[in-house]
Length: 160
Length: 225
Image 1 (cartoon, each protein chain N blue to C red):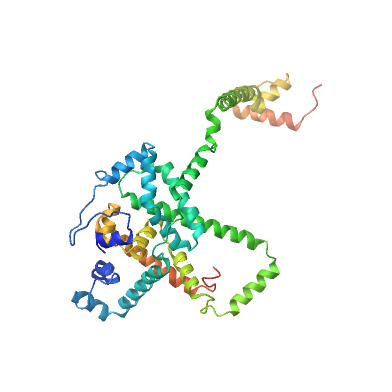
Image 2 (cartoon, rainbow over the protein chains, first blue to last red; image 1 turned 135 degrees about the vertical axis):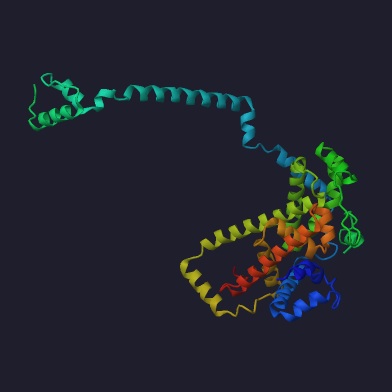
């Protein structure tokens, strides 16, 4: 849709754009049927809202409305919220106890993890073999030590 | 609609005056309204009472226009003012108080409609599959262009369309079409310039047209949706 029509759309829908008041607008609408179709759609929607959602004249709440609002405000103000649980003495103690428990559990978890960790040498098969078979000696060369591990595994006998 | 005409729509609500052709910005921090807000923020009960009495008819009529039910309008109006009481501290005066109240009011209405629809869905889940199938068949066979109550169908269409746009766009459309405010007046109330208002309204109207075309093409009618 052309900028000119967009610019005057609200005037058009509000009935403030008399025919002939803006020749360029009229020309753009007349020359392009799609512009006219769109304008009609906008107008239909605008009329729909005006006709269906406008309240009749004189509708008002029953007398004593302010008193009822105040009662509702007081009722809502007196209802304890979830967060207000933590502002009391009991709530504060509950929070402290939870923090302490988490701290203790955290320390215990870290300590247990440290104990359970395997020693570095345990991960090397050659080292395991040496620990298990005193007759096997490693030479410090990775390839040769690996060969010795394979030989021992292939000719495995229960040492004891 | 100029300021005087707007005052007829909202008898007890004052509007910022706008001159033809030129936009006159209203500083909402320098008015009687701002003093009322400051007093209400300080939990002055007389100020809150003044605020309720000033806006109660407006709030009630907005809600009644949308819901068309006296009891619901009363209940939600109370809820709106309760919200205002508890959240007026957060009102920053960038827009007018009325715009802020309008936003709370329409949001409450749409929250209510959403909850109502959820309740309806819960009830519908109790219906057996056989019942559902029979109901769907009867909807397909029924002439969807002949609703039982035209006005009710039109209202439902209007509400459904307004659900398809953002709360800000919804408020602008309602203020423009239902309350009859001009672009100038909207500019004065919201603190946005007229071009921004026009662009926002245009985008909202585009979305509404697309949504209405989709709804009309949808196999389920507005009444059943």
